[in-house]
Length: 139
Image (cartoon, rainbow, N blue to C red; front, side):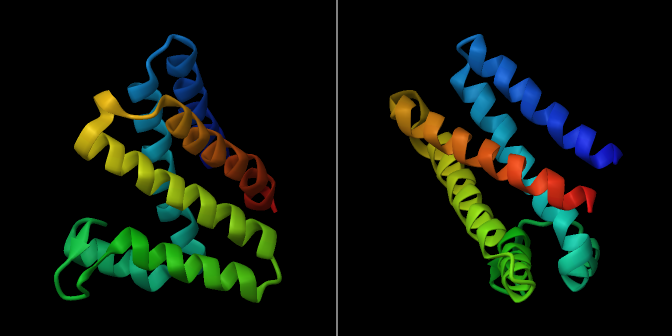
């Protein structure tokens, strides 16, 4: 239950930043939230990925795999949700993950000239995913 509160607090902080006009800060909070929720869900759905992350010491790019640990975990989680007939949750995760990746691209390359509407849409996608997943996590 404490994880739910922790995740919710992260998004509250992001919402506060957004209300203060700090779009970049809010975007970063939401992006980091997605990384944390992927790690959390991986504990249940992709424990083998958690073991590799521990072995490698990070969730970033794994040379041996030629992929990012987060992405590997994301795909496994999606497949397992679909196998459990939770397609809506899987699709919501897909949209939120795509939005997090778009935020990452904006942060990396051109945040100052970015489209505020698109970033707000990405943030909304992540928030909608949270509203769906938090009840699932409680189960």
